[in-house]
Length: 114
Length: 110
Image (cartoon, rainbow over all chains, first blue to last red; front, top):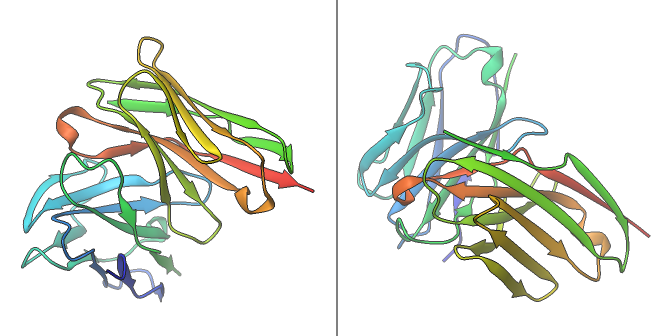
């Protein structure tokens, strides 16, 4: 068990470009969550998966954002046509199931849109 | 929806005790959690309260009063390494996801 891994750790992109982030959860965890965090704020929910099924997507998430978890293992988060307002830390977390008390977070991907 | 309120910053000295409060408004409540996050690091799970009362884990304790929609995190014997941000989070209806507060920055000085 190596914890939750996220790649890349940092990404700088030009406005209008597409970016994709990867998250590898703890192997036996079937719940996977994506959060976004800006400086001085708490993590803000984006979406989550139960195995390969995406069960909820935040209403704050525009159509430019899409997430997948094709085989119920790793997940990807893609942002199309990035905007400066997308600059944030993107955090992935996993948990064993819906009743688990705690999430295990990855170290995040810091996105800077210039 | 859900909303959580925490003080933005708390300062204390090494060896002291500090309490970080959290009040919440939520439709459907299934527990209050606390997370610690050092600058540049990942949030780390500290504690969880589903029922009223105090839960103790080493130097950290967490309290919940469901009737008051209120909880707190108590940190004893403060150490410099406790300087971090602390977030309360509520689980919404049906165990679907955690909603986090804006966080409290704790600064521990010598």
